Image (cartoon, rainbow, N blue to C red; front, side, top):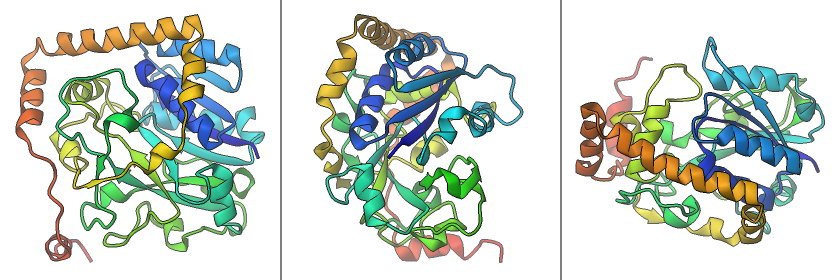
Length: 326
């Protein structure tokens, strides 16, 4: 089975090798990665990984009408790597596939949903857990506190990304594929129409998408400076932080996927090791540079002052929903 992961990145060099090792261990065989406006060596690392095989790097310079991610997906729609794939998934660098079926590989997931053309994986938000300083360690090891299995609010924390058969759809989308060919079968029919799992349910029985959206507070400042990939000019702020900073449960289920050897093999390449070390140093320097400006110091202060997100009850969530438009 050829499984393709599509990724769009900017200034994520320090996280790239760990992300790649994990998803190779899960069972993705090919990677199509778009980069734009990189200052930390991400593009150079992707070029080296492309030389080593199993990854295709496509530079994605602006300007873009709808942001770099949508521009990348339009280019990916026409790319030979997509046409060669059996299964496809669009991912971000802070999203880690976590399969509970079988031994935790993609083949176990597709075997658990044998009739499905599209298998949505719901985000499970892994919060900041009070971590202030950025450290060069895999995020799956650093951050294990997360949202509860049953979350009533906000719906944005229950959005999905979709693993799908390439020949069942004609176009890519950020959260789910578009332009269905015929009538594709969804493992969860309701998610063929929605972008998120129903609040108040447990959507994690077969698989989940571990979403390390925040990371350390220092990393969040650098992330906010980078901006979002899917809407040109949009920024990260305290609302994004509060909607995702959950930590009332601990989930280490992803640790059964051991990517240690794959990660070590990547770091054993002198060029990759040098680029990774330079990227780690760049992140520390970038944080220090940003903190010389008052708006970034103010945001950092708010991160330090703000407690973790409170889990709302079903009744509290109902108070919010009662005011939505019919």
